[in-house]
Length: 322
Image (tube, rainbow, N blue to C red; front, side):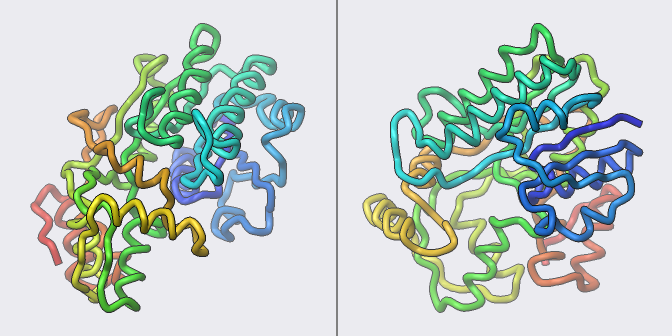
């Protein structure tokens, strides 16, 4: 049993990863700013300690990391507030300052293993603040590879139960008569959350992963229009999808910055200028899960055909779209 600190463990990917680490009989520490807001199933998991703590405070971070065998950082934000160059203060705090503080804490208390989640397309010259800040966060982590065994993962958009991607489009189509879609031709290669957490968990003991950067994608690339249309069909509420021009896409993104819920921003628009796709295969023997074998189960609820399609896929048969 290893002691693993998962920063960002109360989020969508984090909850799935914590459950997987518990199945592997590890002891997991999940710091959160508001313990009462952590999911009930996370708090009640065996060998999980949910601790109220501010991970942005270096002394607190050091106390959390002391005696840890590994630290995993999953923290990321999609909205950065007021745009700036090369990125906003919010992106800097979440994607650059925090990884830098985590590295410093690991060095100080002697943590030997660090896993870090970045984003597919991260680069210093990327079109969006999100991707540029993710690149600088990666650089801060990789700079410690002479002292710490670090591994970085770059997933495309992640889908699965409780995701904020397909679920959002499915929910909108329950209430809207038509979908006015910005950037309809943007490319994504969605990766299943279960596959992502398998890559993280399996990498922990793998020496070959030290100092490596892995791109995580699913088996199929889609346009955003195709994904939105699929979410509507799978949820039982298909709606006409009207793709907006580039100029109208930018205008919609600008207007939605003032809407509640942080659904889209100009920086998201810029991010979608770059295809979120890759030719990379999932590492450590993980087989990519088709979106069509899982998404219907949670977009409309578990019902016989969708449940069995997942079983068929796991048995090595071709899953059929519901």
